[in-house]
Image (cartoon, rainbow, N blue to C red; front, side, top):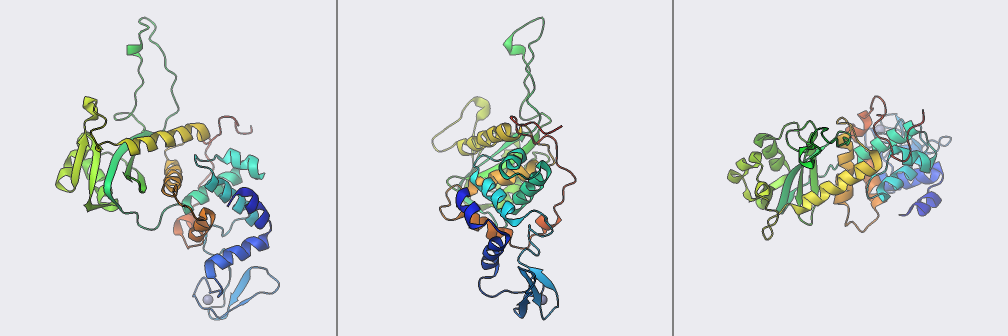
Length: 322
Ligand SMILES: [Zn+2]
């Protein structure tokens, strides 16, 4: 659904409520606490129902990401539409400009939307899968030439393994889905745990580079290695180009939209990147698909209350108001 359609079809609270009620309940409204269908709608409060069994009142927003939000539903719809339409991520600053809400509101809403993107159906990867790690974080440092010997070979630009950046591990099935995780330490044990959680090891061939922590894989799964340390990048179908292409897109979008993201909030942006990637070939109505998930009871979303918006997430062209 494009944004013009969205703004036209869901420009009032009532229209939004009707849409959500249809998605959540179909024709028969059931109590969000006890599931009974012995409910009546409260005549003087649009969208609220009373359950005759457990005597509670509820609405379609109860126990969902929209509960306890003062943001108007049509604005929620706009923000979700903006975020789903953007293939490379969107900053709170842009949401502020596009919808007229404050930066703080935009930031909270975007975080809740990201929480709703957490994939609950178990992702299982098989066939040819590529596994690789990448390092996120830190503001881009200015490269300084050494004073005495202005030689490019002396310029230090540390990246990757051995730096203080945050390691993120990704596993992608070729032509399939991706899974991303922030991993505290890149040990064989941690990498194997992730492999076992997301990959059907009996049905998969795993391609990695020759990083030593992947060496333990051989005993568990069919494992092929490409020797990056010997400058070997592709050997027939043995390569990690899919996952490496993904890293460069995600990093580009973080640089373009947010400059940098703190370690604490990085997982939320990874969730969004994962969601966009895994839905890249979806031909149906993505807005509806998202809303169906968003209407499910979700403890992550209900309890997600970050302390304050972080300063780092700033659009480069639009610095925050002083
Ligand atoms: Zn009830």
